[in-house]
Image (cartoon, rainbow, N blue to C red):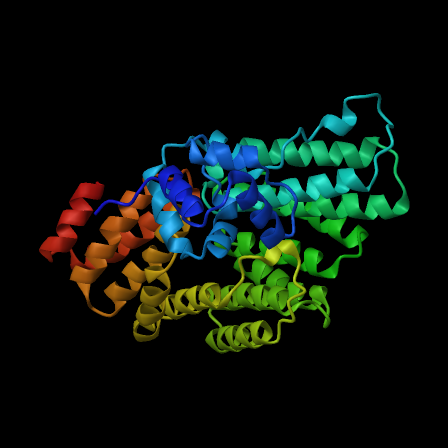
Length: 398
């Protein structure tokens, strides 16, 4: 049976609890500790005007349903354009509004808070949109934040918060640029790193340094990227939240892997899992996505690169069974490693089956990373061209 459209499902779930739209909005605000949802937002969702992807975890919580059920329903409504999706994730308002008056206008804490919220909205958008869809919006937001920082007057406390917001916007902008193969990625990461250091935010500085290291490694500058990825762990400091340290160790593991140091990679993977178990729940908002499943994905990627498919295949298969269907780019990337792992395990038929999905999904996203992984997968399958299933995939891709 086909899943119900999201708008219909939401209305049915709300009605079954005997709640009004206002009551649902109130419950969502309580669950998220953010008073940003109103009855009008719920009404738009139920009329199919917008799919609230950023609010799916909270909707699942307050309506006592599985998040996967809601995500599956959003796929039925998946006709939204990227601009509509982004509009649903960014806070209301205009990023450049603080500069609508003369240069030198004084801004306060609320401006810094709004810029940080806009950075998080872009991060959430990156969960469901690819770099090519987000490139324009992220750089508009970053440029606006830099102008606020440079052209407004503010207290020292607000200055530090503005620096932190610029750092966060630079990180997501650099990430999006890297995904879109845009040449601004490296300079943007360096801008953010400078802002984070001036804000005395060690974990954020480490996030920028680790992101830049990851970018360099994936673009052929392995030695520089590996050194930066290892330095990011130290940059965070010993008191950094466990989730952030897990992320930085994971990136170091990938860098060690690409540099050919398997033992160092294994040590970093172990350190990442240990850090996550010691997390005290005080991680910054930008680390929201770091969890055991994501660490297992990196484990599997490392095992695949090290040609250890018997370890990689079970991990990736388990994670992908419950991975959000709305995260098309991530699913394409992760399944690309699964396809290679199957090929390494001398299972060409399974490799072809997964590769066909990778090709299909990658064709739907504007991601240079996904396109590159398609090339890697198809190149790996050439060894098995005599297998009918493989030959079919290769010929179709050509």
